[in-house]
Amino acid sequence: MKKRILFFVALLLVFILPAHGKEYAIVIHGGAGVMAKDKMNEESRLRYKEKLNEALMLGEKLLKEGKSATDVVVQVINVLEDSPLFNAGKGAVFTHDGFNELDASIMEGKTLNAGAIAGVRDVKNPINAAREVMQNSEHVMLSGEGASAFARQQGLELVPNSYFYTERRYKSLQQILKHERQNTPNDKTGTVGCVILDSYGNLCAGTSTGGMTNKKYGRIGDSPIIGAGTYANNKTCAVSCTGHGEYYIRLGFARDISAMMEYQNLSVGEACKKEIEKLSELNGTGGVIAVDAYGNVAMEFNTSGMFRGFIKSSGEKEIAIFNDEN
Image (cartoon, rainbow, N blue to C red; front, side, top):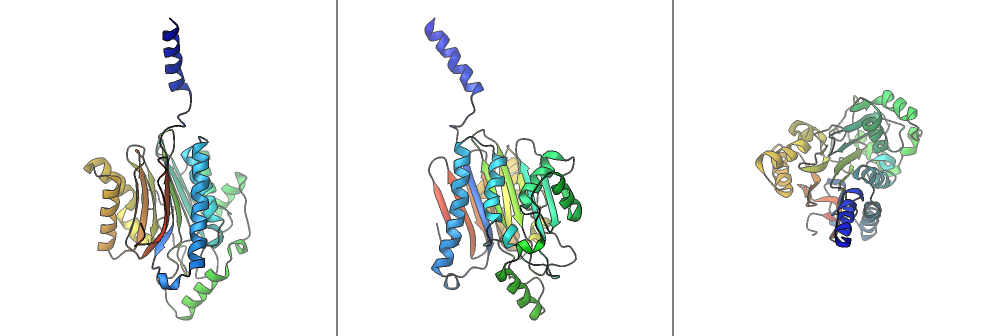
């Protein structure tokens, strides 16, 4: 009788207690683009890798505590948004008119619920506003002043546009304006993203960006577009993209990876590689990170580098920048 009682207690605990012991995985990126080793000194490399490591370690800590994939994605991306190193949040690039306009999106794999904001100039952490849209509105995407008004209503921190100013990004704009070049390779990189499989078996993806230096006419790229720059589905994977957004929009890049896994039975790595091949065929550049429902990760790109890293519950970890790093 005692053994039978213990058996039923154990069985009950399996269904009641959170599954903190299950596998988890976290993958991040900080942008992909033309990166030459001889033009990035050791100090700069270390600075980038330290920030990527900070984000990963925070994510792992939260996952071990049993936090949801959604909460972890937001907090990890906050670390990258608050750093001037990346083209998101504090380090966002400048538009042609000299402003910083921010985009972000998030999607949950369990519910297929999603939220996004585009073209905001005063939301300190755009990914937070995207989550509020997802959780506290009937909409998927809000833009411009309306998105800022909604963020204010939700109690998020708003800042003057000058908060996003960094000398490096401002000089990039001035260089482009001086040579009257539009849409050059300068500062298409730096978008940040995070994809997570949490200990409950749920997937989530998030992406945040300042867009493209010298962008005009309210240009919006792929990052806030669900299915282009961000996608998550518990049946398949969570995806976050970085690169020349127009190509990602045309390909429906992130959703296409999920579809290839669902309908062609490809692995997450195979699907990401095939989609990058499609990107290359269109002469587009960039990268993608993804994690599937089993914790398998992918980090693919067709440029000379992508700021990237992952940690898995198995103990596997990687942080890298250039394409010849393992």
